[in-house]
Length: 297
Image (cartoon, rainbow, N blue to C red):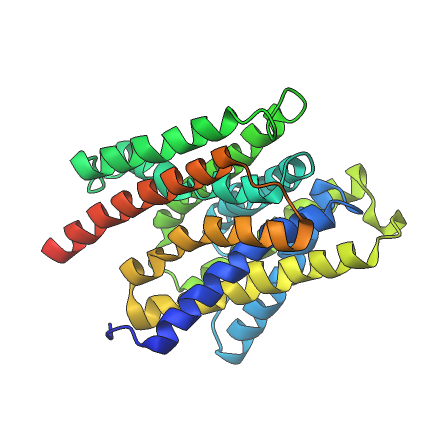
């Protein structure tokens, strides 16, 4: 791994901006499309750049190999469920809240990894980070201006979506020896196949006459945050390693709040800012603990 240069920090910031931009685009997409349709179009358009990359690099896609059940399971848990839950939740809450709630993924990963992996146990720094981060989430739920009885469940569903990402990540460890491009392409294929009958029977999007902004947003969600961002992430991982790439988690909720205000004029309350700081600090300490462990190793 090379020492990060200016271009690496620029690419890391770009990756955070792309992922953060997904939240306000999901909100815009919900103006015309249902959550199942949004999930379907995201995986469909997201698969295009990945499969093209595999084709040009001559990487074999193993979606229907003997490990098909792993790809199908991961595709469902890591793509279908969270994409649906987030889209369903964002319809009723501000996109900036979704950005903060989704930023808890590293915190949830720390908790689940403690119980389901052998070498990712709690220590003092991790425990402090997790407690601070989840305090931020609980504090966010106390903001009655933004989260109330009408959308409380929607906010919980977004949190559940973030947990799905973590579970999907743990399942991916079962096929971690396979090429990343192959795994990503395979789970996108299965997610698309799973969603085709679901979207056909539940929402029938071909009958929808969408707003132009919703159509642009849903295409953007698939091609950029779902497809191209993964390729950018892979480049950063390859050149600079996991610890450097993990810093993107600090930036996503910050950019998510800023972009929600710029494009949708979303309200930013004092509680939102305090929650944002608490979650970011929590992620920082969890990342610091992992960084120290890897360095000592």
